[in-house]
Amino acid sequence: MTDCICGFGKGLPDGQATCPYCGTDLSLLKKIGALPGSYVRRGEKLLRAGRTEEAVRALETAAALDPASAALRRALAEAYAERGEHERALRLYDEALGLDPGDEGVRDARAKAQEAAKRTAAERDKKRVRHKALIVLVPAAAFIIGLLFAPAAGLTGPGKGGAAAVMPPAEIEASLARCASLEGADIAVESEGGALKVRGVVPDERTREFVKDVVENGAGGRRVDLGELKVSTPSPGEIAERIETGIAGDPALAGSDVTAAASGGAVVLSGTAPEGSRDALAARIALEAGNAGVAVIADVTYGRGAAAYTVKAGDTLYSIARRFYGDGNGWTRIYEANRGLLAVPGSLETGMELTVPAK
Image (cartoon, rainbow, N blue to C red; front, top):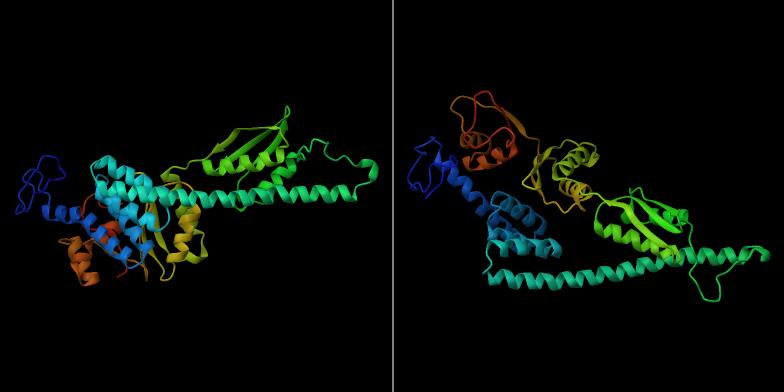
């Protein structure tokens, strides 16, 4: 049985061709309803073949098309876990359990992902400790060299109690500027009332904690005030705008016709890009959205440029797909590339200019 989008036609028989209330073509609705399942099957097949990145993209598309499906969330969580993104996998497992609390398979998979996340966090902490040690040792070495070459009358070493050397705010700022994870951040450190006041904007809470560690290492016991160090959380719309701007200015993506738009809390990319530019586009997405915690769905065709087509009387997406691809089942690609124009697949109008992705 099929439910029509008008809201009145519910439980219509499978043999019914059109909705008796609004006249919508029910065969198209059935095809649209089958899209999430087709993306899931494609994603699972790609995952089994070891093509994790492509599998994630297919499953992200399926989850965006059917946000109420626990099974889709579980499948996408497994793909994220395979890619090593255990925290994102845990969030999706929790969403799946919220939709289907009795699924023991999801509980078992979540427990495994949680153990993997703990191991990853432990490794990250070890790296952070080594990084912090380097930050402390470099200024300390400079301080000792300064003592060796300073005039004897000017020597003022630490007291007998072994107190840590105090770094001036400018030196702490310089240490922060050398950190690769803070590239592009504008962070200021000032001495105010016996404390170190840190001002600026960082992309996420983890980076804020890292800044705190660096400043405390050079504070020499002084209080550290992070009240004016803000965490920036860009909206999906802002991320979409950044990605589009970045693509337009990226020489590696010259000739791309890719648009980005916020949809349901995610960012959806659609259009075409030159053959061989997949890695460049992935790098651009990671650069613009990597720390924002927002899903990016890239439904992009790689190959020759897209074609423009003017809709004629009697045209359907199926007939247009058959004209360009030799197979009418490719109509979904044309629909996805023109979502900004088409409210539903059957809303073609004579004279409308469509973008037809390359075959």
